[in-house]
Structures are given as C-alpha cells and as structure tokens.
Image 1 (cartoon, rainbow over the protein chains, first blue to last red):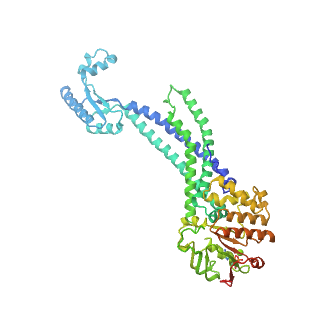
Image 2: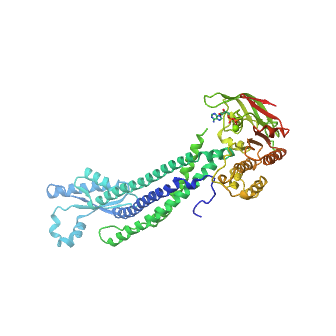
Image 3: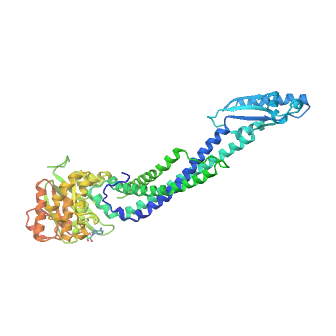
Length: 300
Length: 229
Ligand SMILES: Nc1ncnc2c1ncn2[C@@H]1O[C@H](COP(=O)(O)OP(=O)(O)O)[C@@H](O)[C@H]1O
Ligand SMILES: [Mg+2]
C-alpha cells in the first residue's frame, strides 16, 4: 500500500490544495531528479579523474644556470631540496630522484644516441608516489614547490586535472544546494497550503476540538493528506524525469570514446532517484504535521 | 457510577462568582453561583437571549469567564493547560443549539466522531452507532448527510453524537426545539435513562410546558443572574 487510505473527518479532498500541490511537487521532484543525476554523474567522473590525478606523478627540476660543474652541483641541491619538501608533504608516500643515466635512457627512444647529450644541461626528474586514499592538493603543492625550490615544476597536466576536479566539486556542491533549496520551497508551499486548509476548515476543527479531539488527531489528518499528495506528485515527477534522463544518457553514450568522459550514473544514483518521491512525501507530511501542531497550539 | 476520582465527588460543575461579558459589551452573566451534584438532572431556563447558551459555553470550555471561578470535575478550568482540555471535554457531551454537525459526513460518521476521536476500535463504532441511531428513530438514515435531513432529524443526530460516548456530563442546548411533542418526550426519556446510568444532565430550554412535565430542579436566568427554582 503506497498511500494512506484511512478515513478522514476533514473534507480535505475538495481543497484547492489537492489540485495544485501534486503538480508543484511533481515539478520539484523533476528538478531535484535532474540535479541529483547531475551530482551522481559528476561524482563518478570526479572519482575517475581523481584516480588519475593520484598515484604517481613527476616533478621536473630545471638545470640551474652557470658553468657546467657549478650548474650540476646546484641542480643536485635543488633536487634534494625538492625531494625533502615532497617527502614532508602529507599524503606523499615516496619521492626519489631519477639519476641522469636513467633520464637519458628514458629519452633514448626519441633522441637516439644519448652519448651526445651527456654534457647537455638536462632537467632532472623526481618520481613521486602519493597515497591514493588521501586527496593531495596538487595545486597547493605546485605553488609551494615553485616558491621554495627554483626551477621545480609539478607535471602540468596533473595540476590542470586537479583544478578541474576542484571545479567539479564546486559544481557538485552547487547542485546539492539547489536540491536543498527545492526542498525548502516545497516545504514552504506545504506550510502555506496547510495554513489555508486550517483557515478553510476552522469550523470543523472547532467541532472536533469540542468533541475532545487532540491537536495530534487533527494534525494526523492533514499530514496523511499531505503525504498522499506529495507521493502522487513525486511519482509523477519521477515518471517525467526518468525518460528525460534516459534520453540524455543515450545521447551521451553515442558520443562515448570521443571527448566526453564516461557519463553513466552509478546504481546508488538510480536508487536515490527512486527514493525521491518518498522523500518528497515524507517532507510534505512532516511539514504539514508540524504546521498544524504549531498553529493549533497558538489557538486560545 | 463513574465519579472518577475527583476530590469534590459531589459536584461536577461549580460556579463561584462568575461573570461573563463578550468583548466590551454588557455583562451577560453576573455573580453566578451554583453547584451541580454528580448524577443530578437540571433544566436551565430563561427567555431567549437570557444567556443560557453562554452559560453552557462556559462549562464546555468554549468561552472563558471574565471574572470568577469555574470548576469542572474538580478542576479549576481557568488554570487548565491546553493539552488537558481534550481529556476533560471527552467527559462532556454537548448538544449544540445549532447542532454543528459536519455536513460532509454521514449521520453514522457524525455520531461516531466522539468514539473515533477517543481512539475507539472500529468494530465498536460499527456496533454501537447504528444501535443508538435506531433508538432515536434514524435507522433508515445511517448514511444520509445532514443537509438532506430535516431539522428534527439533524437534532436527533446531534443528540446521538452527544451521548454515544456515555459522557459523565451532558449539556443540551434547546434539544427539543425542532421536534414534535412526542419525539421531544422520547428524547427526554433518553436523557433520563442516561441520568439513571449516572450521567449528570443540564438541559437548556425555554419550553415551560416541557419543563413542567418533569420533576427536575431548575436553574433560571434572569437579568444576568442565576437562581435555583
Ligand atoms: N459571541 C457573542 N458575541 C457577542 N454577544 C453574544 C455572543 N453570544 C451571545 N451573545 C449575546 O449574549 C446574550 C445571551 O445570548 P445567549 O447566551 O445565546 O442566550 P440564550 O441562549 O439564552 O438565548 C444575547 O444578548 C446575545 O446577543
Ligand atoms: Mg441559546
């Protein structure tokens, strides 16, 4: 049984509320569903990017200026400073420099015989492993490196990706606050509708009081009505949102392999969407009950 | 029977120097003193506009006295917290002068209200309500809505609603105003029957002929004052 079917002493069925509240809740549920889907898809994308960002990364230390011998010593000092700094950064598991021979080996496929390069001032590389379970702020790390060790730079691509993750998180928070605001608006509407109902049925409520009804008895009738209207609206909203989201998903899958990251929604997201009508119904119910109890308590 | 543990078991209602005025209007009631012993049966008489309905309203907590003190079942009602009103009101059955039936509910559902409000089981409701409605001659109108009933029929629904929960105190405001004489007598016998079972009864009426047919004490209101006759 989805809806309350208990009889009601108040003629709430014929109220104007019965007509507009479900539509309003439907619209609100639709908007929440779209926002939440966005949150979940974005959440998935962020998680994947985050995994790319974490793990291993590379720090480059540009050769210090000066004559060859001087430069080599000073560059080495810089590398050591960078390694020390990296190792003292929370979340960094290990950092060690790659020596010149190894660097040259890495370059061999592109440059051929590296004997010629032996004397060239090459940048030195530091191999860094970060704890994937902790989120290391690469943006901040990059800044600190740049400031404390001249010539040291963190892998650009990772920093950019890390900024993207931060941006996405902001968008995620924004979408979540939109959902909260939608909840607030729905609540406010239920409060208004309930107050109107109380005024319209004042005479009946008065009689119920005279007969010995407790405020909670009257509140229950308003609350069950609000639950039913909220659930009807919520289911309608979900029925509208599901095909809309399905279509967006289908269009996104057709693009896949191209520019877009995988835009599928995790199963928790689908569960959340399915629960949404009940959340709307419960919100309406609790709000109505609270409103009635508060209004009646103020009566003489 | 049913003199639920009050320290003033003898008095169901006590008025002490009670005065009532509506807003800044004149005093409708002044310096009213009386006590209704448990199990008593009183008529409340007076001309139309004398203040009978107002006095009953004070007892069933729909109006507050502008002065004086009212005790109901031993409790000072001016100090009664809101949360305790329902419990007290359930011990009082009221037949309103204008009935105050709920038009969207059937006769059966109207009469069932006091039981449902008190959390009675539906099986009990379905057993007792039709029984009582047929006692007041409305067995064929169980599912009729009040607007389709005559004034007299509505009045009987209102009476059934007032007595269904076997109140300790019954207040009836002109309960025979809209019915034929023989039905009026039948209703008064119903009240007497209830009275025998222990219910304290107050019937407001301006029908002197009816009052004189019964041998019950009388509270008479005249010029704002209440006297025992
Ligand atoms: N709610 C009210 N506001 C102002 N005056 C009222 C109100 N109810 C009754 N009255 C006045 O109080 C007086 C007594 O009325 P009421 O108690 O209804 O008398 P009765 O029931 O004996 O006919 C009348 O003059 C009436 O106009
Ligand atoms: Mg009157």
